[in-house]
Length: 417
Image (cartoon, rainbow, N blue to C red; front, side):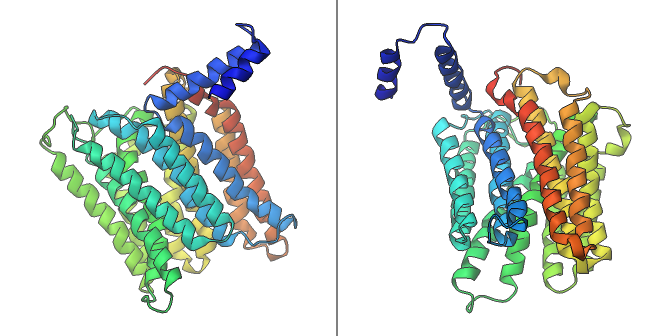
């Protein structure tokens, strides 16, 4: 730091110059991160990781790189891309909800560095070590948020039982995969596929259900069934809603076991049913009409895509690697960017944009939907299959770059929620 100051004085920077303004902007940004808003660092990091993970496909298809992206791409997108957004959201929202000390800048940077390390290990083919580092990162997140709950001034939303189940799925899944790779001959045959389902789907699907029940009514102007009076003791009705959430989450976990047991149709059908039943009761989107602006439109597309993808898988279980992209691309990834948009706009003093038409979000929705259709149909077009993988990746990348250029800069602005 002293070296930086000496260089600045040697240049004799004039107050008001571009160097001074950029320095103030940088200092202001880091003050916002230090104020307990880790999303400001982790959302941009997650976006870069996502672009990197998806770009692996066109680079491979057009012979720029030689390593097949299958496993590293999947791990980078789950552990790196989605890991950054989940960590950034929970690290920002949960301390505010519970009235506990906010996440420090050192904790934020530590989580970001660990997730970046995970990405590097996965890209270099050190899958077991990448899974272990991710396990340690999620364990640290659970620990730093869990310790804070001891000092809570309010009760969390009951749906956050599902968030806890999702984090536990990430822990069990990443550790199970690491162990099955370290000692392949000693582990039962079901461990690896079950652990993969916990990591690739449970880690994301369960928090989507939990966070969605709390946050989505705000998008559609619906009554929030997760809202209870501020109370340190669990308020009346809290346990019933938490119990219902836990039962739906348990149904998702049971669906994984059914799939691993060799009954994929039943597993996918149960997963879709648990999701639909839970959202039908907790977030009755069908009562919201079709207004609400671009963010609400993106949410409708994402919320439709997830159960639709699982229902299609129940009908065509032999197309698992194809149809899962309906869930991952237009489901998880689009939902991630829509929720992130609301967080960024809300925390940068732009809440008036929540329910209006935003062309960057509309373009994002269109390009991500195009990416999904291109990727899914590619497996029915064997002669051009690999090129279509690349085109799908470029469509996704284009949508995210536009979103990043016009929505993401809000992480540097103060104000709002």
